[in-house]
Length: 157
Image (cartoon, rainbow, N blue to C red):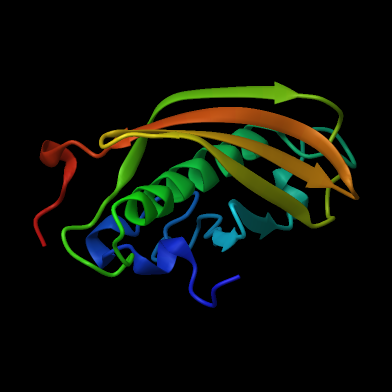
């Protein structure tokens, strides 16, 4: 795995996302990395991520899949273009579609592993399949269809 997370390459003006923005002090601040041909992130839910006592709120799992998916899309797009992630212009993705299947209750307070697998990379669209695992069991799986961030969403630097 590399030492620098995908999200660490995002320019400051694109680093405020609740799920993955390093500048959002109230957010999850997930960090995604290459692990061979897959990507990986980890996150430990806090007591306030509760659904019912002992279990994680499903919306948290969806947001982890979502943000890991868009980070994976960016990294895969850079890789497909033969570019390093710190080159300009930034390749930033947003979610066009998010599908999540909840397979079993997810325990609260244990580290979760989010793994992504790239299914398709095109110039403006990347499809990522992801799983969330707790204690060695897949609790949720999903698919993110990520598209290049439209120019009108790019903030002025």
